[in-house]
Length: 170
Image (cartoon, rainbow, N blue to C red; front, side):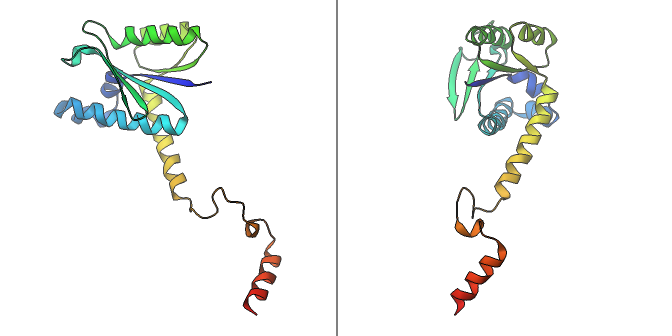
């Protein structure tokens, strides 16, 4: 069964220290950076991720676009990210989907818990994202040889390998 990750985009951008200057300089770029972080995280964890941005911060109509592995939602004018997330959480709860919601909004967290979903504060999510990035980097450092390969040499004791090496050199 798929696991869903719903993120209140501006809540995260406003909560994380690395977005303070970026948000002031270029909000669109801050959103793009967040989308990149979430795409990598969701792919690593196996989540179906959706980032929701309030329409009050942008001058566009409601939209849902797919950006790589992440759905990006801009709510309709007058609709908050919280109300969109509440509605989606309820829908996912009805089909018994495992859903995680990232927000530090206390009222939103109460609603999320009431629907049977899991809440993750922006700070907790930041820590988990850093751990995931570290795990990804460690995985990337592993040598390519021998990964997912079933070679005889990987299963033989050292003394047998030494004997074969002597035979090969004769």
